[in-house]
Image (cartoon, rainbow, N blue to C red; front, top):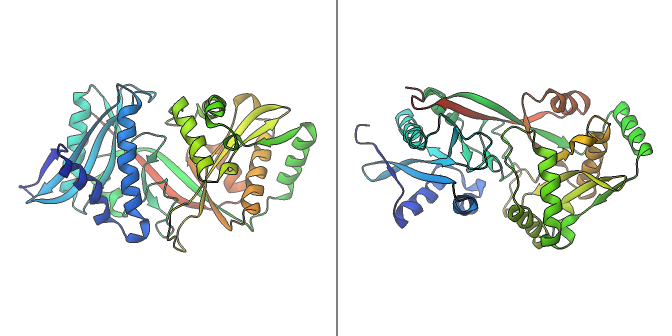
Length: 355
């Protein structure tokens, strides 16, 4: 492929080709036209989110035919200033194309002073992360990545190594909690005054500071954590209220104090198939002072109650770090939830990156 070139996106036509290339890789059942619009919105929002955020987009082309795309990204709010991301990666099944794209992204990040490249992350760790490596027979929730199975081979042949594995689990309506878990729930409930609060039912502007604080305190120890901004908190609340799903986001209130939160994402895309994930439990977290007190069992119970009351037969619970033995033990051994999908985030040292 000596005539292969990788060049930056510069013109409106380039932007259009970058956006539309995804549609040539995937099936129509993935609703890629709507996801293509979402990708472009995310890129535009990412660039505006912080003055120091950086993004450069590239296309791989041979004899006028687009064969792949990639973005080099730097998120100012990421916890390591020495790490940059590659994201929005799509490629035909040709190792030389993938390697050329990854090398171009690595060169760009090294030019920005970065020492390590992680990805795919599109465009931040609060968005689509990793490639799916197992569970291809069930389409994930549209907020998660889906890709052809050959992507794993492309990335690993290019010299990238595994950084973090992430898991999603399957909840079914027939999966009743074991008796000892139910006893733990009842014991915790007897000790506390328990209620739920639905912030999206009220003014997004007034409720945004509360969501900001609760989200950041509950999730700041997670891998890849990026703090929620006030603008993002308000937009989340506004979108839930506007979409008529205000009860899909709720706080656990323990003895009058906000203790944790649950954010559930329905699949609002039209033309769902039987293989589509209908709903995702995306966030389930407790503030540090409420952990190790049996209160996580109440959070899980309230989430199950919600799913059952809305007549969901199944739900995707994700994403869970593969090295989080505590949560994995709860989901796999106590609740017997099977693994639905496996995701992999890759890394490479700069500037070599597989050379």
